[in-house]
Length: 451
Image 1 (cartoon, rainbow, N blue to C red):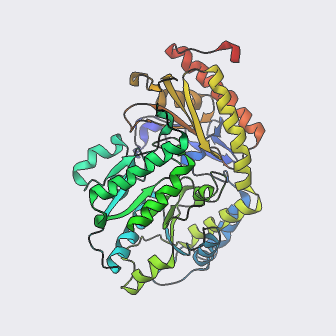
Image 2: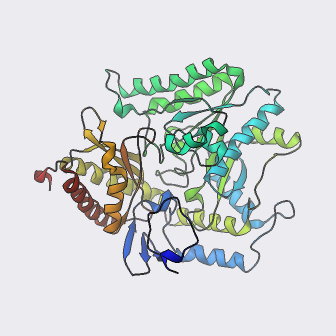
Image 3: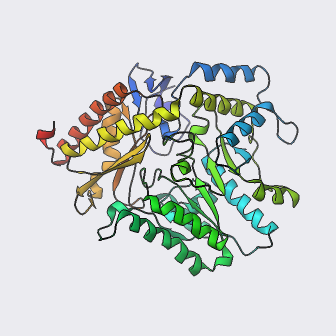
């Protein structure tokens, strides 16, 4: 079917070629052109494309049953995946509820938190504090938690408007504080907000442990994470970690929470959890939250495909592949290589203001002035243009506006966890070529001495 004959509409009018096949870190269009999947799609394809062992396990389940409604049957794939997931969780997170995607996971986490509060005789608790900028999903509940103006503002009159605090973007701060002090400063914003909102009305705080699309792999100072946990405990506020993007090994640990030894009250996962082989996500919580809800009449929530045996067989195969091929360890090792290569780009391109991330969730941000971190002029549309230049050269990266969606330009580089050092170098050759072309178009400086 030609583009002109298509009855499918997308988010924009930006046409793309038809996908033919995927192999490892590569995707091929119908014309035979090869692309390096430098963003794992939308940070999804953690184990790469068309893994034959995963496909074989999915096909084996297809031969048995593709659907069994959870109110009618238990299934071995869903039970086995839940058990495997709990083994990979921090101690005490031992109850799993499956969903189909990230927005569903975040909303499920919030609804579990609310229903638990009701079982505890705390009906006034309904406010969920989140950060700005942030991204938690595009359904209404998740969107109300999201801090990204272009996506949220058109629908703002249709939502309650949940409270926000500033994301810990310490790389933008120009003060005399240490990074540890800055981390504590940003954490105290949560305590101040809880008090301002009245503690008895605050249900939960939801955060991305490492920033996703809206902040570009933002990592807070180490001091931030423990203090946030302490503040939530002080006021009986549930701590929800949105690990939709970071979970399933992307940052060099199964959960990003492990980098700081934090046990959230609820974890939301998706993306790499199913790794693109099936729509799959989950929330994981402790029995102390789940059992009172079940005792009170059950979890008033659910989706048709929750716990689908085909999706769960895919998820189980993905987790097995992560372990058997040591892909989480590879993400940690190759993440160090990738960060080093991205930082080297700063020598050649003065308009790269920051490089950040953990494991294979990395990003770089473009600026007008590295000292002040003043963004590039919005009229350059750098966040879009550089993506197109890289795409034309066979490299896929992922971008967003950095400063709440209205200005700033960051680019996520998050290849599959199977990537090798040689493949990272191949990716960098294309990225440099795209940056050279962008600099030439815009008149931005390039340091030839760093070539």
